[in-house]
Length: 198
Image (cartoon, rainbow, N blue to C red; front, top):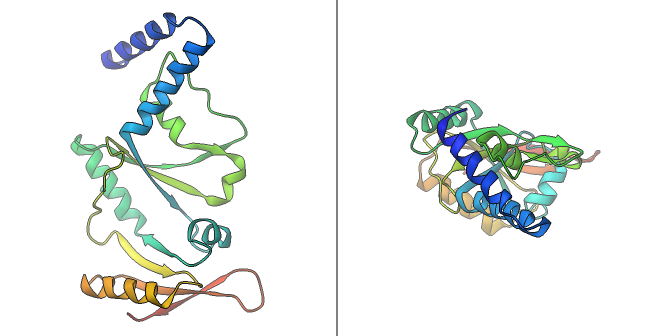
């Protein structure tokens, strides 16, 4: 056990020992959760852009758009930041469970913190979610490196105004990003994707 982790364990154990009862212990647990919210930035991603439920839930009922990333370049971006030691960024696969993860109020190691941020109810398994987790990045913008965005997919119900705005942004930045338009399949539930010019 590293010295800083040992000191953190002693501090949390001491605070829990001073608790006057279950209410104080619950308050101590809440303070750990609040600390996580205040210091860690989370950016959610999905491995399946074709999932019609995700388009309904997260793209304003197909009126929004989807950004496709070059997964290898995104991972390299995270690794380069982590190796520099200044802005630790990791890309984590979500674990889907029937039960809450067991997190001790006495010990909140980095692994324990990560479990809090990477565990969801099994009902959400269809999302195939990944999370980009940025230590110290709560409520801060994150600038991605070049060529990490590979494609943009327009929802099948996107407005003409929004479609034109997205095309204009892609043209003005001279980005080599492929643009697709989602369309409802004619004979089955699902989406097709047609490449379009901008």
